[in-house]
Length: 257
Length: 254
Image (cartoon, rainbow over all chains, first blue to last red; front, side, top):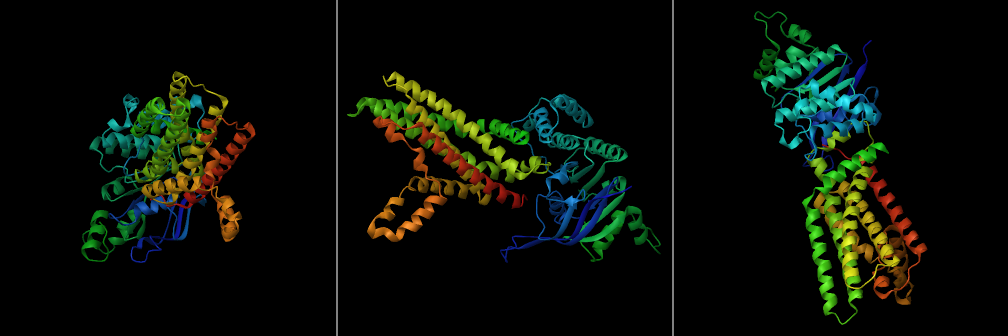
């Protein structure tokens, strides 16, 4: 049975609301839901409001209006994040720690028993093919390696929901392929994945559902098939998802990509 | 509690590598050596001058450490986005504040311990002696640093690192002039009395932690006074950290 793991209802976020001239609406009256067990893509151009929305879902940023719930609880309730993990676009780590120490820190934050920590670290390092770099300092890692470590820290404790903000940006083809395989494996095991991207190819190959955002507003949501089918109704030359989004952009209907 | 300890130990490891610490330790070393030299030149008793300079140097260096680390640590975590590693986990943000406090306090304590040992050695080498009043003075100094650090963290949640550093230094200065309540008792200044009493209640009186004059002059200080002053310090640490936790809970981490 599917459950709503993320519910965003009529959410608006205005930064610097008190300063009229500097006020900036990042998200406007946004509503969407993410159901458990699916890979949902959150797509939109740069500046569409994807990262702000993700931060509101994680309780890092509070909405100006509307409500956000995560795993059935208000997003700012820490208990809502019990089985939720986050992968940020840029990996942010403490430079004084090694990969092993970083993961141990996360295990401790997730209150693992001491005897379980080594096994868990080995498990997640293997998943991202990084075990040989366990003792190396994070600051010596390339962007791709840091992103793999970022994914490893998210896998700790087998979360039911993984939220990712452009997880494959800056990765080489091998890393991208590894991540795609990993996403598929996780989905098969029942993990819900919600990730933002502006790469349509990732959406087409991975996602069960998509939520399309532009200029802080919801533009489309549904399965890739539904969106493609509805756009191609009565069309002589059927278009791909990328072409549909691009066609809308060139027609001046919306700025998608 | 485990989470606070995890954050505290990570913060300790992070801050102990901060080069500012070594510079300040060097500064203290120089000051203590200078105090020995001043003692040689002084017409006053050498040990008295050393006590005065040594304790003042330790207080000042502790203040600098608390200001530099306390006011920038949280801002650095937010601007460097490493805060996402902790804030996206199932933990209350108050744990982050308390963990940061204990981590930095452990660093301050370690530095203070090193400085105390250097100070003690230089005192003994100058034919002075370490008495219980020295221990009491050091206990009060480290409590004062705890209070300054807690307020520095509070200011850093409410403002930028630069402003937090300025506010903390202002807090230190005002805190040391917070024993002027008696002025209101003077007839011509009676109108000041309610303001001074209110101010005295709200702001911690940092002069409670300063028994340098007693150390220099050899006046006794009761253990009860020291324990009461430490309890007073802990109360203000708890107030500052609770306010910081409340403010941090409402802060957008964008």
